[in-house]
Image (cartoon, rainbow, N blue to C red; front, side, top):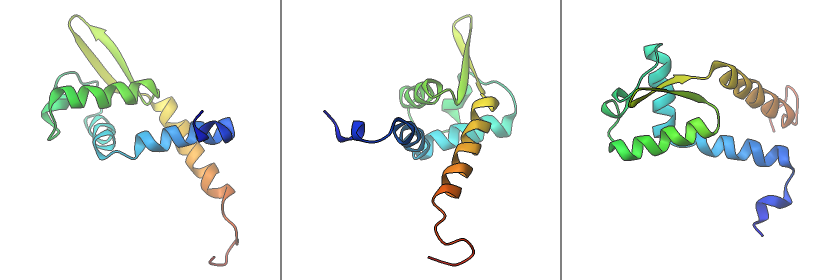
Length: 108
């Protein structure tokens, strides 16, 4: 048994999300999709200094968390930001940081 299970499910879910967002390649993918404003397929690997297989693994992780959507179009997969999930993440981060504010206006 890993010690992760000793923590509340809510904290486990947040930790998994924060861990996924803790990799610069995944942040670069999200940023690139946001900047282009369109769904992308094979072009993403051309934008990062990583091998295509590595980029595909990062895309898989982002898709598993629901941060991006992937739709099959023939032999290609088109990736788009999942704005609903990203808005949930934004609320989750705001709510978490608000919940650990310990001193109000004072510095801790």
